[in-house]
Length: 358
Ligand code: BYC
Image (cartoon, rainbow, N blue to C red):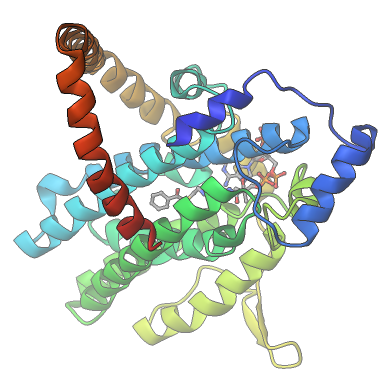
């Protein structure tokens, strides 16, 4: 379905005011909340920034499986192991929907994956931190998925149709992820003093990196002006960060935990939790490839990509064989095939109508 947009490959259009009437018409459609679809004309800048954001988002989902995968064999109970496996599989699925959405913009998945493996494309900074104890799995669900939902719910209304539609399903699953994480934290906080200490230690280590997930401050953000104008982003990085802090601090207090920020305090006048300064030098270091686990994460991705080469080769060979057999069959029995197609089509059409609700 998504591959239809490959029709648009090569239609590179200039970006900005020089787009003239076409560009103005595009902006009017965006302003009127009309969805932009793969075969519609779009400014080159819109296509480029969407490809960048969606593919980085896809890479984040895929790399995001690694820190949690570290705990599958050591989950404390069968129930926890089943939930963790399901969550990690969901993340793989999210990555696949997102690569498919990015492909509708005319960039092949192989190329996007190559950009990740060569270190050219970014993925979320948060996945360059280690998962040292089981409590980190709780903290990732509660905080990382909590931050992801805050950022991703507005993306369900993104102006680009395939991205917005992918995000609807992703957000439903993220909400389950967040709850399973909070439940792990609650269990630890109601357990032994050592378990509560583990939960506190995980919060201490994940809190600041989670605030960095929302990206640089609005003043430093490179793309926000364009992405807000094009209604890809609906809220600025700082606004989303503040919403996350406001939602999360009372949840932490309910757990009986404290936040590793001496400046955190409630401002009754504005109704917001005010927090201390973020260490942007750490964020820059992680983005530059020098976080605690950057090298390990990329090495793991490269290794599994190489090890999976035979699966890609086998799938391609199988597809070729099927296409060849089908062509041979059609050449040998043209009348039969025509009758079969005619018989099949009404059922196919009916089932399509059912799934699209027509
Ligand atoms: N990490 O101009 P800005 C998840 C880069 S959740 C790395 O503000 P933009 C998951 C940015 O790419 C995580 N890089 O950018 C959860 C840009 O560099 P380039 C994924 C970052 O795009 C649980 C530069 O900094 N979520 O998947 O307007 C389990 C300047 O920034 C980060 C998404 O991807 C960062 N944290 O705003 C498993 C959501 N922040 O590209 C998986 C979709 C900024 O010019 N993405 N940069 O080289 C977005 O909403 C936006 O892309 C961002 C950044 C808010 C992240």
